[in-house]
Structure formats: structure tokens, C-alpha cells
Image 1 (cartoon, rainbow, N blue to C red):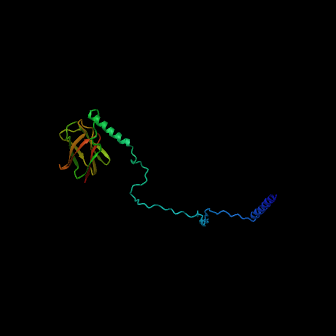
Image 2: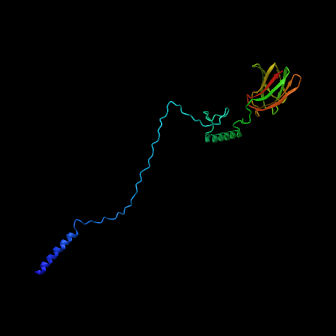
Length: 233
């Protein structure tokens, strides 16, 4: 019996002690703060920009780029069509046409006119005091039926001196009267010879028989002219 009472008393003693140890005055130890602390820096202060209203009454200053353009130089901006952009097919087409033409000529199906002179030939100006001129002409190559026409022009008036003059191996004479001032002479090829272009040689003499000029024309196409200018002093 005594042992039971002793055990009960010990239990009350232990309970009382425990309550006094874990009373409301107990303070727990806070955990250690291991987080990284970031120092916050305030952003710099930026002054607002100065806004100035434009003056609509003031003319803007126009700045032009410097240029070295001079009068007489080609215009850098042109509306005229040029050959800067060429179709590559045109070159191929032209070569094919030349090749075809050459084949036709070689086979006798087309006449070769590439050698013909198609521009008038000016033999210059001759000064003379003679009242008349003698022009002697002939075919200097093979006789193949060349025909010419001779015309004199003065004061915008034309006079046919000879027409359908046949050029032979011998000389044919043409007489021309000169008037004060400018006088023009044109020898026109009326056809092509059967062996090629119209060819001829000429000799021009004054009334005293002095040779003033001699030369020739070669392979003229039909309608091409030899031109002369005479000034009667």
C-alpha cells in the first residue's frame, strides 16, 4: 500500500515540474536566415527632353549636295532611251541573220550588198576664174553597164547636163557653165553594174585645159552621188 502511495506522489511531482519547465515564458530560437540579400539601387533620375515647337513661318533651310556638273556635260538624268539594258537575245539574232545572209549569198540565192557604198561622197571645193568646165568620165573597172546622171545647181536651180550616160572604157565629156558665186555638180549613180557597184573615174579641166581635179568613185549603190562645189571668182 505504501508503495502505491509513493508512486502516485512521484507522478504528481514530475507533472508539476514539467509544467513549470514548459510554461508560457518559453521562447523558441528563430532559424538562421540564409537567403541572399539584394541591395536595391534606385534608378537614376533622367531629365525630360526640351521640346521646341517648330516655327511654321520660317522657311526651312534646303541643303543641296555639291555637284561638279558643268554646262556642256551630258545630263546625268535623261529620259532618252539608251542601250544600257540590251536584250541578250538581240545579239544572237543578229549573228544568226548574218550567218543566214552569208549562206544565201554563197549559194547564189541573194545578192551581196555589204560592199556597196551607200553614202554620198563629197570631193570638196574648187576655186576658179574659168567660165566653163570640162568633166571627162569613164568606167575604170570592168565594163558592166554603169549609168550616171550629171546635174548642175546654181541659185537653187537645177539643170540636167546629161542623163543615162553609159560609162565605157573611153572618156565621155560633160560641159558645165559656171556663174558668179557657188556652183554645184552632182554625178549620180543610176544603177549598179552587172559585176558590182557603180564605178567611175573623172577628170575636171577649166577652159584653159588646166586639170583642176581627178579622182574616182567605187562601188556606189543606186542613187548615191559624187558631189563637187565650184566657186567662180
